[in-house]
Length: 286
Image: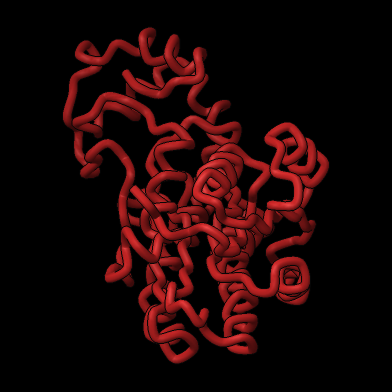
């Protein structure tokens, strides 16, 4: 199915991580041009681009998403390289691995989590909107698009990770507001969000390796499987497509195996060893 992304320019933040790399692969396969952002992982990102053979299809840029001026410079790099930035994927984020109740978490941890996950997404959106304001909509009327990568923590909460949950929850208000702002810049522009549940990435792997963690996670899902990074990337690509999702804006798509925030299974009904074997092979299903 044609996603109508050929030749469009997509900014992907946090592109050196597991979901970010799959996003880059997915959009590249559709013929999009890539503006790939990293912070501490720029060398890893550049090596990935070389290994994938992106060549002139991609540009890499380093910035701290907490710095609005730096994010404006990233967008400007895309404009200079490709003429404009049509799509932005605010994917960069940080999940503190250590379980801590709010009254035990340091002020520094809470501030950093909110600054990266919420304000970082806001500064990404702000920089992208600034470019769109200067350049205007595409003449072919393939509307601009912004997609936030949220989390089920923002929908259901996450005990001992309230800093992360409140940051991701804030993205919903940001999305709901910006969908009404971007149409003043491009009448066909859209803003949406994907909310992943537990996904097999480098960021989550340490937690998933804890004995009993997978069984605990899967008890809340009708589908007794973990998401892969590709599952998330394909959902983002769908919402970003001016052909596949042209009339979808202001929506949050939860990609979490049907999670409802309640228990579905007893531990005896979950084959945790089988899931671990598939994860080790690079798969994510049960």
